[in-house]
Image (cartoon, rainbow, N blue to C red):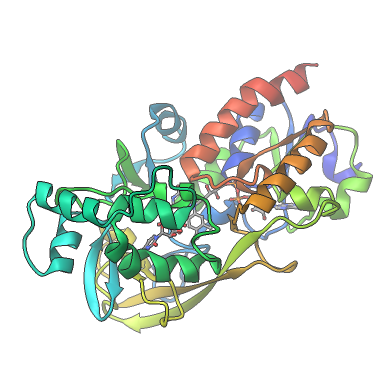
Length: 377
Ligand code: FAD
Ligand code: UDP
């Protein structure tokens, strides 16, 4: 039985969902085998220090920790210390630069004059389309910010990001972003906004360090499952892949990250979005600006992000979640319910857009409600 010798539980995927369940199970005295097909722990939150420049790079795109859940912060604080960090994002549109999320400064700059909160609200309301019940991303965005701001900041970016007409996308995608009638330009509203002092990978190394946990990297579950003993499994890979895509493929979006090294400061901020449809990339992240407490660096590393549909060989990052995807996912979920000894979790396993704190919160609940009872029974 080799890989699984002495194990009580198999966890497929060493991202936040899998690592949290593994840590909880190990702390409760169970022996856990964690597999990941990648060569590192951390899933999409993985960070590494670039040897040439000393800069910490977020390998799969910028990850900013934000939550209003004290439970999640308490839990993670056993594995890291924190540095306060409030994320701010800028966007370029038509050769001009504006702050995001859309706030009073964005609306004032767009109109070329200072606007009072009530005046800006009225300006947006007059252009908000009068949708009684916005049915898709475009209608929802227009109802929130008005058509001119939608066309300047949202339509082109969304089209590039999802390669799908915004009228076919779910309204929920756009409600992630606040709209503010004041000059608060923090990207998030959450109570806790902070970065792990030593990076995300250090968190995973501590979570998975216990004597009860064996981590095997570069191992694909589907290459070993035929030989695996009959143990409870926590599966955090794509749900359609688990069932050999027998009901068809779910729609996923992937990102190509083009890294470049430059001298000095490239763009003067952590993230610059590019709203115009004729700029191929969606945004540029400059990693040293996420960690200013680490001091000055001579060089800088940036990543341009290019978004596209995920093919069979690509990493799936974002569920696209069109109506046909939702129906297909529901059918996969029915298959999953029949797998009594397997718990499906995380962003890929539940085909849901989850931030890190949501993946951790979901894992803590899954541990209590599903995994622990399976191990006990
Ligand atoms: P993942 O981290 O994807 O982990 C799943 C793991 O399972 C992967 O390591 C994968 O290799 C492994 N796996 C899959 N199939 C198999 C298999 N067959 N065998 C073995 N292993 C397998 N969240 C935030 O809170 N703030 C942010 O700023 C933020 N920015 C993001 C930016 C980008 C570009 C992306 C893509 C995501 C971002 N997120 C952010 C979301 C965050 O990445 C997720 O919430 C988190 O990664 C979810 O953890 P997970 O364990 O569900 O999935
Ligand atoms: N969005 C946009 N313009 C921007 C930033 C975001 O139109 O400059 C839209 C886009 O549809 C995106 C959604 O808002 O998918 C959510 O933004 P977020 O920053 O949460 O993007 P994600 O996490 O998808 O990268």
